[in-house]
Amino acid sequence: MPLELQLILELALLGVCTGFLAGLLGIGGGMIMVPFLTIILSNRGVVGDLAVKMAIATSMATIIFTSVSSVRAHHKRGAVRWDIVRLLAPGIVIGSIAGSMGVFALLKGSTLAIVFGLFVGFSATQMFLDKKPKPTRQLPGTAGTLAVGGGIGFLSGLVGAGGGFISVPFMAWCNVAIHSAVATSAALGFPIAVANVAGYIASGLKLTGLPPGSFGYIWLPGLVTIALCSVVTAPLGAKLAHALPVGKLKRVFASILYLLAAYMLYKGVFGA
Image 1: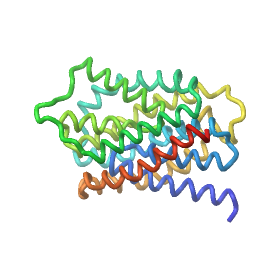
Image 2: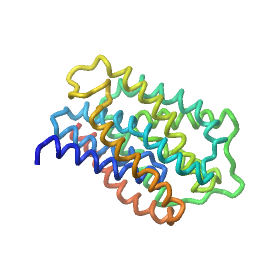
Image 3: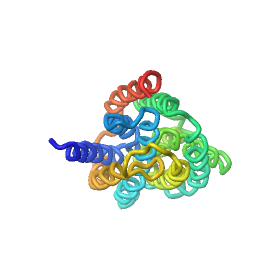
């Protein structure tokens, strides 16, 4: 099989899977995408440190498209809590820019791989345990919500995920219904992605040694192929989210996340 055709098929399969999972579980797809993009870029001669950073940035860029696609499906069902989106979005934009333009560019790829692995492991544990919140707990006030949004945006910028690994557990912890939490997380993925992508491009424009088709830290061939495939399957995942036992699915998915977290930790300690 020609190398370019193999690359397209690999990226297309990744896009199909991550788009579906973004719609189903509200995770933005980054937790699956980053490890596999790291592998794909490394296999094509990109040095480990840069491969991790480009995988994170490219993963985030695809979320612009998967978020729009999946949120439309959720919105049609009335599941998106737009009041929560409005409260969290300002902090998310501020935190995203601080993460992607500042800290991301300064940290080594190996450090980012370790951070990614730790947070994916944390997210998997939250999914697996499925702890129930106190019935009286509500969303914090304006200042608290702004701070939470800033944290979501900042950490998302470091790991290339759409924020669902924090926002879904946070909203569930505050007694937002799980289907609404997933749908709202999908909507929050858009401001997270746009703000972070702007930072990745700005901080990576002067880099040397980037592979062909790069725009800052964004790898355009990966972005285009994954986005085209993921926008097709994201609505399917969103549709099934309202019909399947998402709680049980999250436990299965958590087991997969542990393996991906272990790979990224290994990459950060030994390989990046």
